[in-house]
Amino acid sequence: MLSMLIAQPQTMYFEAPLTTQSGASIRGYSLTYETYGRLNADRSNAVLICHALNASHHVAGVYAGQPGTEGWWDNMIGPGKPVDTDKFYVIGVNNLGSCFGSTGPMHVNPDTGKVYGADFPVVTVEDWVNAQARLLDKLGIGQLAAVMGGSLGGMQALSWTLQYPERMRYAVVIASAPNLNAENIAFNEVARRAIVTDPDFHGGHFYEHGVIPKRGLRIARMIGHITYLSDDVMNEKFGRELRGAVDGAVRSGYQYSTQDIEFQIESYLRYQGDKFSDYFDANTYLLITRALDYFDPARQHGGDLTAALATARCKFLLVSFSTDWRFSPERSREIVKGLLDNRRDVSYAEIDAPHGHDAFLLDDPRYLGVVRSYFNNMAREPRT
Image (cartoon, rainbow, N blue to C red):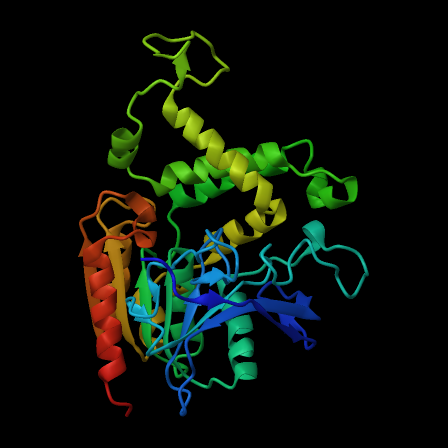
């Protein structure tokens, strides 16, 4: 379905410092955001969308006169879509430390007059939630109808229910987890090492040298992309197909090279890496993957997730996907169990889908139907 929304980025400036969990403060920062639909008279229909690693505030719609600029969740959000902007006022916010408009490593530190670079404070999921809450304060929204996100965005949605339990009525947590397991942290670390060991990284101050650590970014993206797809999808899409043709004929043999591209999957990964290195900031990648690593609400409760979730008050929808091995259904079920132990209102859907972690962005009709039904019920439920 082609988007009918015209998106318009906006920016909100904050002079007051935001103290991060690390103890550092960020002063004079801006958050870039977009809104879709209309806020109703009693300001009760706002839905906050939290983005994942390489996404942004541009959640839905297109930019005027710019075809092909659909938001990253445009299949989910818009008029008549599962999150219907004829009923809900949807807000997408770009997180602090990102490279898509909100203040981050590429911006000038007002305290030094120099570009932050590697000196941008380490930020956590909890810091992002606090910044989002400040934005909602300025928008005059005291309570959200719902907060929603997938993957890292789902972690933010979960954290919202613990940090500001009275400020939302529903939470929608998709393809997410209560923390990263060791394997996920390991993938993030390998990707970060690829970046920081790039000769063009210069300790994170590569802006001063007029270079970009593209080699490291390419490898980081290739590693990440492998983890987002399932084995079945990779085999179905690429298999062992060889790349390209020789004199117009299909290749039937190997080139016997250790450095040239032989297989279609190699060509695909290199293309994804090249594209990513052209638009994503290296320091932002380090910051966001670290925020993923640090998220663990049960840590302050001796690892007891049930105790950590006792603060939550809202109703929940959790969705997982059978072939998502990066954020497996077992991890969503941990959250479901912790919420049920606290006698919270929880709906859970486990979708048998072949697409791996990327399934939360795709057009699976069962998945979209679950979300549509949940938001339709939300719109009909009377306020208490």
